Length: 593
Image (spheres, helix red, strand yellow):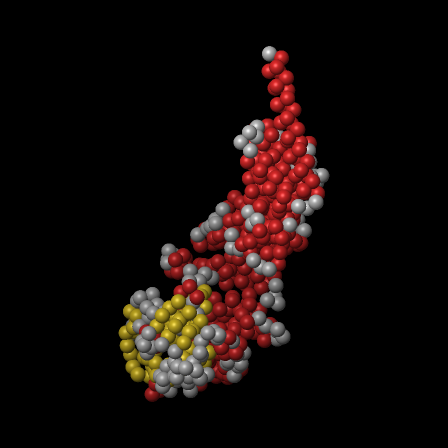
């Protein structure tokens, strides 16, 4: 029995001695930065079939240490590209044996994890600076995971609960790599501990945008409240998000009722009013088709009212007044159509025409008032935005149309003084037609694609070929054209419309200015419009439509729609002139040949 005991003691001594010897050799190689020799030793040690489980834990910690050095040293990391993975695999195997990390803490083996953390962060930073977002995210995510491990296991002297800088940059990299779900995960960690300061405000905006799109109302509400609390000076921004969420998750009629309640309560902010106004002025056919005509009118009136109230709060924003005027101008145009529809000499028809005319006069006056509120503001602004310039260009045309109509009305009511007054106003605004030509100046910029070349494809006498850039708004594709060498129009690309079609507004202007001659009018015809309905209108010939990039159509059949507000459609009478048409929906390109 004694021999057996002595043998057992000898074996234990031998095993402990060998393990200490292995550790000393590996430690010596590491101190001399002979990392490959240290790797050979630790690999050989772990490969021994006689290695006991209690010794494997120590061997795995040494492997973590050695391989983390191979990962951290640039010359070796290229040779051993999976060194970090093998180091972490060794750690996980150790952790399975020692879940409380007792040996790692007591014998200071945490440095191996520290090496991987620091090296991964540095690699992430380098890729981030090079705008290599996928790799930046990969390394930052690894660093973030290890940083949280350090904090959770109190291996760091920091009292922080998360590694905020690493979490922030992991989120940035994920966002730039279009990994939005991952970006939200990291940004949420920061927001959930209410981090603040200038560097962090954008994460709240991202979280609001994301949850708005995902229709995640609970998280949206939570982060909106945090954003308002942490960044009170940007309340206008948060109100805009709040309104977007409300309009996204409510029907138009629910929104109208909420607006009416807010109006009654008073003290609505400018931003909230604009949120309501833009929602009510929607052109989304899916929402509008669910409403009857009375509801549509109520929405437009509410939109005009909200824009007007916003202008009262900020009377230097000319677009608010312009939008109010445009909405009333729309009512004016609709009543013009209604007036024209009451034909005949019966007393009933005359009464209906008189009623429509009375309403039309009121809307014309209101539209003119608001447009003339906007006119001096936008005209006097030194550095107008593109939207402001475009609005100013449209505004003078609308005012010219209103005063032309009012002047013509005096011919029937016999008020000569009013005729002179309205004639002067008509001429004032008409003289400014196309004075603000940003639309023309920007046309080439809109349609300019560097890969389009016409040098090797001579133009035919009717049309050219190439690519035309379309602009998508609310699900509808638009393109800018020049008609008869002088009129800048934004037209809807509509393969479902049988003809190019224009409104009565454009037609009247062209006739008054000589762009459309009497011999260009060819008669009456039935045509299919944008919504598939069959209508009757006056047909004309447009001598020239310039689509840009040398692509020109000549002698195009067009229809005049009996409405002042009808959209401008580029339909089949223009498109059929091309041999082939391809619509690249992904890039919003019309490719013609």
